[in-house]
Length: 214
Image (cartoon, rainbow, N blue to C red; front, side, top):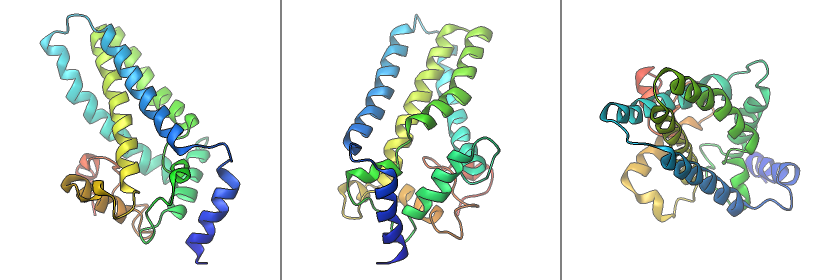
């Protein structure tokens, strides 16, 4: 048994409980995101043309938050955020290397999808405070639109990341855009590049701006 296979087996025994369900985890992510988006849409009231600009601006903000969180929290030891670093750099990158990227079953979703504690952290640190500030500085519609983008971006992130780790013979792997994004993520999982290149999991806007795209 090679070192990667041995680590995978050890990780499954130590960190994936017998009651864990990858299907349920994914279903929760989708339900949480789409349910939140539906609730926010219901709160919108006669959105004005200028308020719609929130959508592209919030998308750019979310992309840069994704980049910053991945580059400086998931791959750097930040005081108080060691759990995130250990789970990503110490576990995810050992479980999935550039030579062994594919899930071997639904239970391996535990190593890809965010656990609830990280969902709370990212929304609590980056989405909720800014949403409240926007509601105070601008309008309630702007705040609700911002949360809609945050939830949609989170769902997009999780689904794309999961798709990158599907087996090579998956039909999704042949989609042109997904194939290009998968290649960027594969390069990031090269141990020589993971701490310096390709920090965007979704679209490489941050990597382009900060010149870290491989």
